[in-house]
Image (cartoon, rainbow, N blue to C red; front, side, top):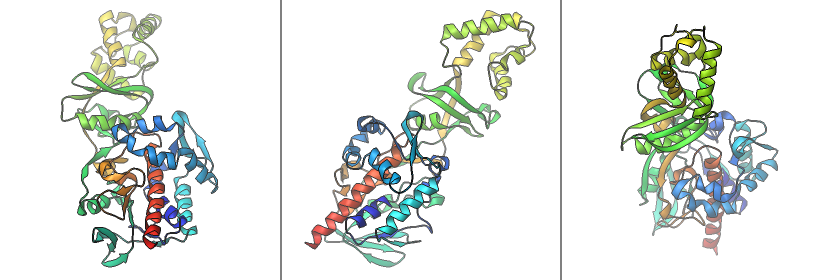
Length: 403
């Protein structure tokens, strides 16, 4: 929508081919329906969240900055609020409002919208784009912007069409894989804790016992494993590591306390409540769902009085509170991922214009490109910025062809 609206705003006769019966289906789901639009941080930090490929985005983010995006929506009646970690949301907390404003932007600039128009193939003559075939209809045009998204949430229409189209004209597609996706774990611990949300914990991803990455915040246990913001952020590294060794999550349930402070708290608690049963003492330390699991894993009888718990038993409890381990055995399918990693190789796209280096008249934007970041509004901003640049560059390309 940003690409089409900007192209039309720059004077191009623009057609938006929408696969579904409504615009912005996937956008309406983002941020649990709240739509984390962008992040209020400087561009260097912004780019760092995309890893090695982040450098590709410097041009687009400089042309259409996070501040530009906020201004774009505020001018159209969507004020924003900034929350923890610089995450920017519409003040209404309504992703539908964001999608509707973008749809209005498209319409007010005279874009022709064709719904239920799946593009089957790109049309090329003499090495240049000359249009597309959509449901057996030939639609002519001097430029085409592929803005199809990734391959996650296929019910919204995001089924990887862009990879197929780009690959058909010679582009290299970096193998796609799930990013920002829940993790599957071994054993029955997670299923027993299903529905339990933990806040203010630290999760560390380990490969063969060596820490790879760590995140602080909120996580959720599910019937298959774990999810939640910090797990989604760790998931990309987890996915990359699974084939190289034993991947585990170490969860620090008491990150605000160092080892000495936690040991002192446990010792004082056991002394002060010496007659209470171990099972009941655990309720002062843990959510109720975790109590029975801790009884089993610490191998301390649930009815043992606190004043009879030995130093060695207290040390076992201490270790488990600071290092609650789950073995990671896989990720959920790409259809359940928030973002798709992989896509059109950035080396084959001009970062200044989002133009294909292989096919004249072809442009790319958003998730179809091999760029992805962790949570926090970065991925949506990248989509908006690359869309803005691609739409503008496509319009200028068409204008130059007319001269």
